[in-house]
Length: 265
Image (tube, rainbow, N blue to C red; front, side, top):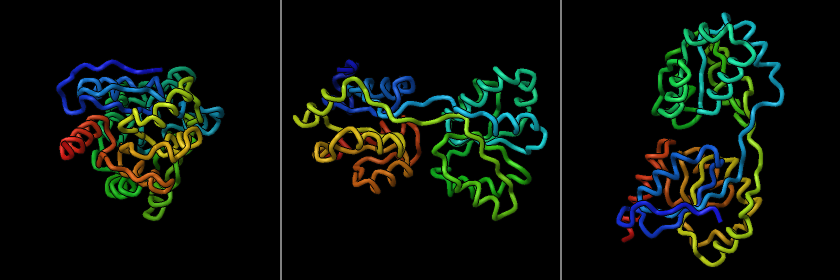
């Protein structure tokens, strides 16, 4: 059982066992925050994040980098896989890339961009694709390159095209289903009501969780969603979040969870 130890027995989440469904290699921050808040963490990743299979569209865009007026990133994964590919295949473009105008959704995405030497203007309040499109429409003119994942919708592209901003989406990573080794043990824990809350971080994570776990076993668990998009996806799949972080970042999720349990103490 992939259970993480408790760091603080007197904090806001003390005594709570939290199931974390984020990919294992991207869970360090949320695990650390939960532990410091007193929770016992059970890691149960239901998706994996991998490089794109086909880089043709991205490479074509990079061959014509001067055509783009700006880059937009809606996730840390988009930044990481895009820049790492540029470093590997187009190393001569790194300096030019670092001089491009870039926009990032959320502080984490901005921080990852900055770690690669790619300064980006942060949209903290862009909670979903619709809000992002409205923000960009006010600030950006010309043509935008949008490195993203295989499950990214076309809302931003369509909304911006309506106001004369051209957006080209290029897939740089793919989200795939993942079955953890501890699936049978987690099912047993849920059946025995030993899990207090389940934390979800993306619509795909919820979908693949429900492919692995009978929905009836979730009854009695608090459902936590990071951001309004993930919360909406949960509702559409029959899970109704008790805890919703209005902005999609881990610290806000922990604060919202602590408030939820404090109000019930």
